[in-house]
Image 1 (spheres, rainbow, N blue to C red):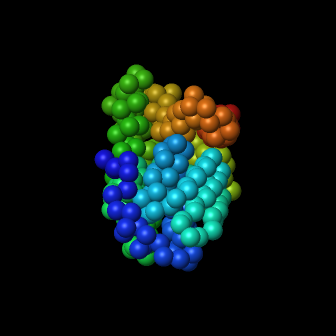
Image 2 (cartoon, rainbow, N blue to C red; image 1 turned 45 degrees about the vertical axis):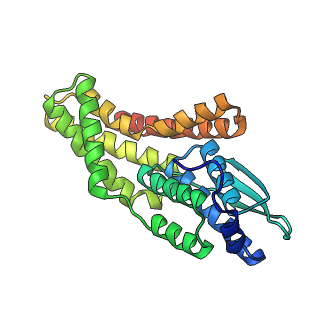
Length: 266
């Protein structure tokens, strides 16, 4: 649990000695905020974490403003002019492991600030982390299979749904970076998954295609984005909430369009 108040103002003053140090610190804070957003953090958590981090490094005046498309940080240290920097956010994803590592790093720095260069190196190590494809695939297989059984499918349906989940992981790994945006990726992925489910249903008539499709649709739905958007709206961040909600609805529409197209064509 990170402390509410920086423990060592003296050390913070020594760490930020000039405008160059302050500029480097702000850039690292923007890197942290951007990475936290990519990993699925809420806007309010990003603002609070960066605010505490700036105060821990000795900022006399600190202001952080974040929405779903940008982060704006203004810092002022004793004897220096206030500096403002912003960062455009263009994408997001869910990586709770990376988010946990970033939050732990921020908590450690809030309790005991480290040199900015050391902070930069630690951030780079976290950003270079790549999710384990095997763990990711296993999680999606279990989720899709369990949901298929939950909605009335049998063991054979669950196995087929798990196979399709592996196919989704493969497409995410190799196809996502080629698509113009998440919505187009959802359309293509749901179309391909829907087409293969129909193929399996034609080859093996005892399979319940509806249950298989539901299990795989559920792991494509952007549940975290929808939850965060509603949380933003309830907490008063209307701009971030509506932007996130519209994006989530478009992603859902892409999933529906892809499966519908597969059903229509095949």
